[in-house]
Image (cartoon, rainbow, N blue to C red; front, side, top):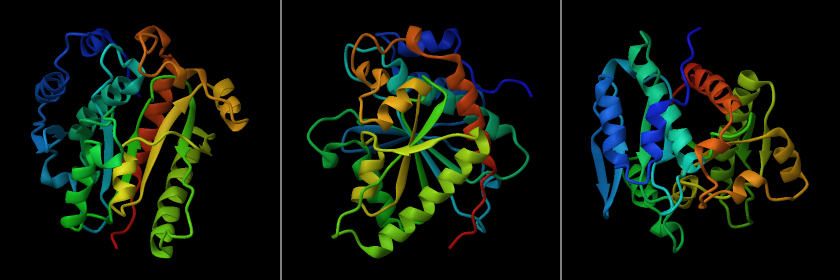
Length: 268
């Protein structure tokens, strides 16, 4: 099969300090025949990939896929979160050419790097809108820092005594589906504590959401031992550059996204 995901010279343009990242994403997708309108909430510009209606089948659950395209000022943001966004853009072009339905709702979010708590996160108002529109039965998959390593890490959720049983049940079903998908795709994967990403906004609004990230094998072992991975230490710094991405990440992400495309769950 022809390689679907790769890092090329256009990626250099995407992570350049002068890049207009919103416009870059829109132009990239429009050149492939996809429109990408802005969903604006409180000054944050989220980008919604507009797939044709025939790509959706109401008999099955929608898979909402999210990755934030903003980055911390002064950092190239190659891994946090340019690689995931770039891979998902390439995946979007692939999905647009498939004959069958895929039920993927793809959104690139703005404001994940905001400080001041989950309610200041750009995706919070987006998640609130999902709740108001009764879209809370989607399976929500957040991809963050997916450009380095070949071990998929699924965010581990720790519930409190105040967490409703109904939410725990829904979340556990999503987590189990995600684990099964990762195992099928990669034959390996771990469920470990990770920093919150846009999943925090959805969780705060009562919508189950999992984050998927990647780590090199030695760093995943370190994380299991409670150590901070070297990859995470690069976040928000000049070290988060293209030079520190790995080819294995594209191969791993392609396997995951191929499995996600094929994932079908009956609508509730």
